[in-house]
Every structure is written in structure tokens, then in C-alpha cells.
Length: 212
Image (cartoon, rainbow, N blue to C red):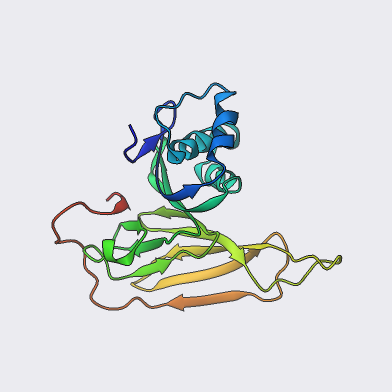
């Protein structure tokens, strides 16, 4: 019952998670008051039900995960998949490590580069507060961008930027575009992957991936 992945009440949302959600008890009580049933005492199952709750309202997995992580207190790295959209993997990081492995017609996520070495040598590290949407041929990352000017009251502005993951002709492009609050600067850069890409060949289980 306590083994990963944990699933939502109706079995349509699956979550794997590293870390500790400090306000899991409060979120669990809120969900139970809305009729959600729990099969374990884990904070990971709380995440699964909370994503399902927001998905019912927002209708989009990426938005539902972003709404969920905005409520979480603690340190974590997590990955979420929906039965309704199995070609998409949504991951988030706050306090815990997270890395995306870039493959050929497939991409992977893990908490450590070592777990991905059997399948790829190309990586994109998630930064604090990032939420990423990953598909076989690319994806996007939305995260907090520092360096924005304070507002008129002198309060710091938390700006969000979207970074799109695409792999055109072997080059991994990363571009950031301001969303919401204006930024003091923009960012656009490209990263050429190192040579020696590996596409499997090791024994044992493969890391979490958007399937071929």
C-alpha cells in the first residue's frame, strides 16, 4: 500500500515523490471532507488526490500540478502522469533534486544523473520552483526567475518564465519568455549536448520516462 507509485481515488492519476510534505495532514483532512478515500498514510497519496482535485476544476494536468505544488510546504521532487494523457509527464521540484534526461524520441526524469546514465548523456537540471511538462519530442519548464525589479511599493516581484524544451537537429534549445510580471532582462540561450549519447543497453529497470 505504501509503495510507489501512489494513485488518485479513481486510479487515473499516478505520482512518484521524493521528500516530505510538511502540511500533508492538513491537506488530507481537506480532501477527506470532500469525499476522498485514502489507502495509505503517505504524503505522496495526498499529492495524487490533490492533483486529481485540481484537475477536475482546471481540466489540464500541467495546470493541476502547478496548483497543487503551490499548496505544498516542504522539500520535494515529484513526477505525475495521467491515464487521460499518458504521453505527457509533469514534474516539479522544490528543495529536492530533479533532472531531465534527453533521449531520442524519448525523455526521462530522475532525482540523480546516475540513474539516467544507462539511457542518456544529455541532461537539463530542474531549478528550485520549476514545474516541467515533458513529452517524447520536447516540453517546457515554468519556474521562478530572479532579477525582476521591485514593484511600486518596494516589494519583491516573483516572476515566472517559460523555458521550452525542443531538440532540433541534435541541439537542445532553451529559451525563456517572461510571463506575468515584467522582467528587468530576458534570457535566450542554446545548449549543445555532449557527445556519446547512450540509448539503453544496461540491465535493470529504466528510469521514469515518456514511453516510446
